[in-house]
Length: 131
Ligand code: 9YT
Image (cartoon, helix red, strand yellow):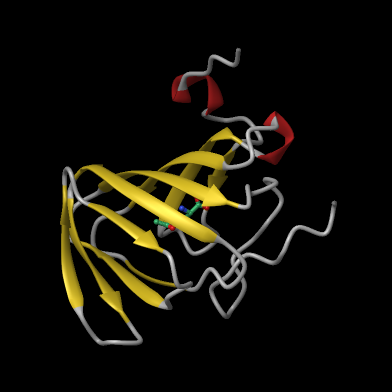
């Protein structure tokens, strides 16, 4: 059994600050934990707009608290995000995330993030090359 608290992750190599300062992500589960998915707590900072495209990953995001919106760049549809909202990027949709307040999100990635990825200019994590 694995037991972790985000408080114990802060300041470790599982605590990843976005280089652009738009979000912070605490990786509760990574590929090395062997679950077949990764589980992150991500805080998206208020007033930010983040372009994201997970070309190689499926991601589900559950918003615990905060106010914001997600724009599906394929369809142009904008969906509000608040506590209780879940969005799932089941078609690798390019999207923009706008935070009106800090958004506290729980993110699940399949395949799991290894922990070494960085967001590229195109907004996606590279495929895992370790396996
Ligand atoms: C909501 C979102 O995808 N933000 C970017 C960070 C990502 N969740 C991560 O690396 O944990």
